[in-house]
Image 1 (spheres, chains in turn cyan, green):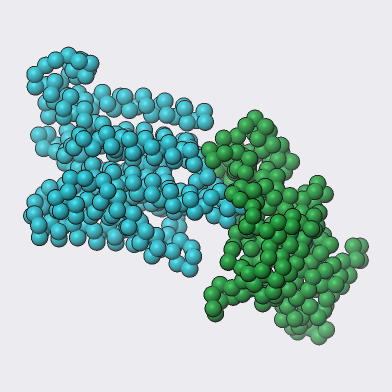
Image 2 (cartoon, helix red, strand yellow):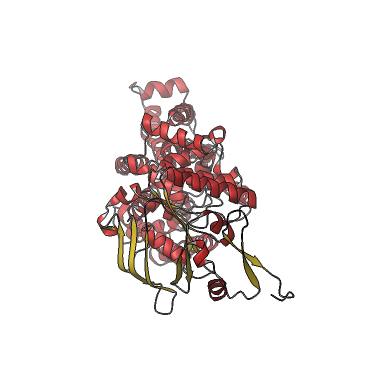
Length: 323
Length: 263
C-alpha cells in the first residue's frame, strides 16, 4: 500500500502541473497568475468567463473521462486476462456510442442509461462469441471487438444520414470530442466514478486472485461469479458514462494501465487509483494539445490519443509476441 | 474419514465424456496418487472432489458433511486445489501470490494482518524461496513455479491438498525434489490427493494408488496391488513391458520395452 500512496502523490503533482498548463493556454492568452486569480474568486469580464465557464469545466471533464477510461481498461484487462484490451478495442465504447446515438435521435436527454445498455449488450455478445468451448479465445475477442466497433460506427452514420445529416458533428463525436460540454452530467459522472473506484479497490484482491486462474480463485473462497459480473458491469458503466460525456475516445484504457503497471506491479488495489489519476493527466494533456496545436482551429481529442495509442498498441503486441 | 464420494456420476452432455459410479474415500494423513491413461477422467474427478465442478449426482462429503453445506470461504479452509500454471497474465511476485493464500482468513480487501504477513513469509522460507520473494512468478523456473503454488496452498492452511499433475514439465531432479517436499508436507499433517502421470515415481513414494480408465475406477490399493501386469495392460493398452521390483524399496516399477524385443 506504500506504493499506492507514493505513486498517487506523484501523479497528483503531475495532474496539478497539467492543470496549470491547461487553464492558462488556449486561443485566448490568459496569464497563469490571472487564471489563478479568477479561480480564487477575482471578478473580471470576458477572461473570467473563459477560465471559469469554458476551461475549468472542460478540464474537469477531461480528467474524469480519462480517469474512467483508464480504470475501465484496468478492469477489462484483468477480467479478460489480456493486457491488450481496452473499452475501445473490445467494441464496448462503440456499442455505448450507438446506444447514446439512438437516445439522441429519439430526443432523449438522459444519455447515460442508453449508453450503458449499449455497452453491456456489446460486451455480452463479444464475450459470448469469443468463448469457444468454455475458454476465452483472445484472437477472436480482439477481432470481434474491432468488427463490433466498425459495425456500430456504420450504424451510427446510417442513423445520422436518415435522421439528422449533421455529419461533421457525428464524426467528431465518433472520434472522441471534449468540446461539447454538458456541465449537469459532470456531477453524475463524478459520483459514479467515485463509487466504482471505491468498489474496484475494495474487491481488488479478489480480482487479482481471479487473474491467476478461475479454479484457484474458487478454491481460495472467492465468489467468482459475483466478482466477474460486478466488474463487467463496473467497466461498462465507466465506459458508458465517458462515452455519453465525450464520444468514443480510444486507447486511454490501453496505454495507461500498462504504464502504471510497469511502475506499481499488477495489484488492482494500487492500479485503480493510480490509473485514474494517470488517465486524467493523459487525457487532459491530449485535450490541451488538441485545442491548441492548430489554433484557431481545434481537433478531436481522439485524434491525439489514436496517434499515440496505435503505435503503443503495436509495440506492446510485438513485445508480447503472442496475442 | 476426511473426503468421501459415494456413487458419483457425472457427464459433460449426452454424448460427452462421463464418470460413472465413482466411490472412494480419502483418510486423513494419506497421500494418494491417481493414475490412468489420457481421457480417463482424472482431472474431472479431482475438480469434482475440490468442489470446482458441480452438476454430479451422488454424495460428496467432507468430514461427513455434504459439500453444499459449506458456505463461501468455509470450504477453502479445508481444501486447496493446486493447478499447474505455466505463465500468468500479469507479473505478480512470489510474495503477492503466496499472500493470496490468506484470502479465506481476510475480508474481501485481502489486506493482511501482521500475523498473516508472518505466516506468508515463513511459508515462503520453508520452501527455500525467501530470497526470491520479490521476484516475478513468470520469470521463475518450472520447479520454482510449482513450489510457489504449493506454498500458496500451504499459506491457505487447508489440510487437504488436491493437485493436478504437479510433475508435468519438470525434469527428473525437480520431480524427485517435489515428491520429497510433498512427503515432508504429509509428515506435517497434510493429506494429499494428486494426479500422477509418472507411475514409477508415484509407486516409490505413496502407499495408495487409484487407477482410472474410461471414467471408472479400475483398481484402488497399494502400489504392489494396483500396478500389476494385468491392470497396466488393461488401462494403458501396453503390451511390451514388464514389472520389476525396485531392489532397495521393493516397490513395483513398470519397465517399458521397445516392440522389437520379445518379452
